[in-house]
Amino acid sequence: MIAALHGEGVNIVATIGRDGDRERFGPRPDGVRIENFLPQQRILPYVDVVVCHAGSGTVLGALAHGVPLVVSPLATDQFDMAAQVDGAGAGVLTDPGSPTRTGIRDAVRTVLADPAYRESAASLAARIAAMPEPGSVLDQLSAYAN
Image 1: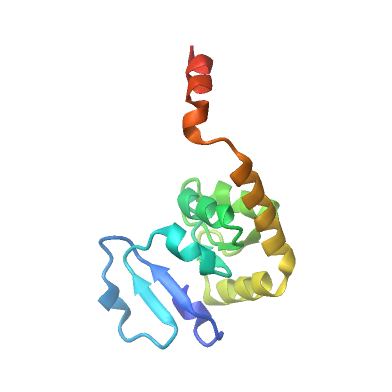
Image 2: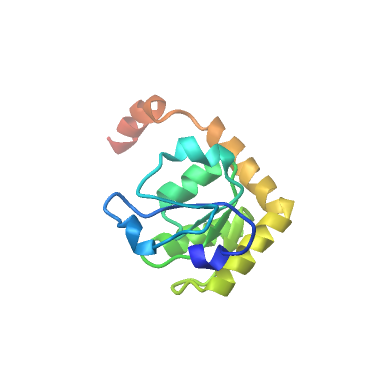
């Protein structure tokens, strides 16, 4: 995904997991930052697009901040999440099961060029913000379970 955006004139922040080896990426060009982990709430307010494999935490975090997505699912429920992002108009589904440089690059270009994706993501962010806090529905869930 990083290589797909090389030369696109964008800054890239990639997270590779707590146990990931940042050195395996070798020297990085200006504008590329690789981290093991970053709290989403600290970075998402400054992001124009999220490129990911459509894990639920990343998708929901991005949408809660009104950030459109490029999703390229690899496994499990990622395919369902990616289809929902695409269906909601909050991002582009590309290369399911096998991400390609061209697919990722073209999808990022599409999302950045068309404000409808950001508008859809912002609409979903407003809906997410209007949802009750988890603690406030606990009693309802308990009653439902009984």
